[in-house]
Length: 96
Image (cartoon, rainbow, N blue to C red; front, side):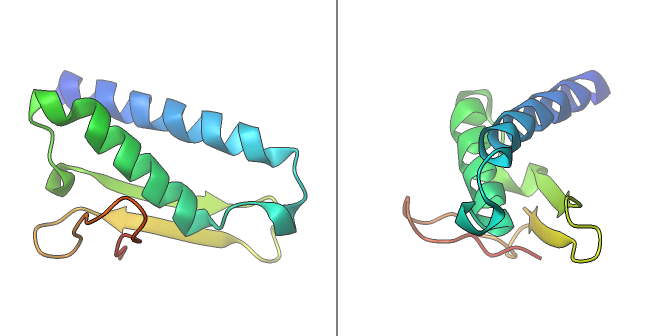
């Protein structure tokens, strides 16, 4: 079980790093907000692992953007039961 979780964490990190690299060369003001990146990673991860029974209450993500150390940007998702619900493709996730 622990190996499965560790493998999933690595996959999520890979999804994040790919997404962050794709926007890192763009002007910061033109980038997606951090919460939007987290929401997209949550949707992608849940879609990818839905067939294996992975549920949103098993997922927790924290993103801290330190490119501007004086003004760090944070975003998160806590998939605890009742705290975050996925609904509709374009609606935002509630993060904690």
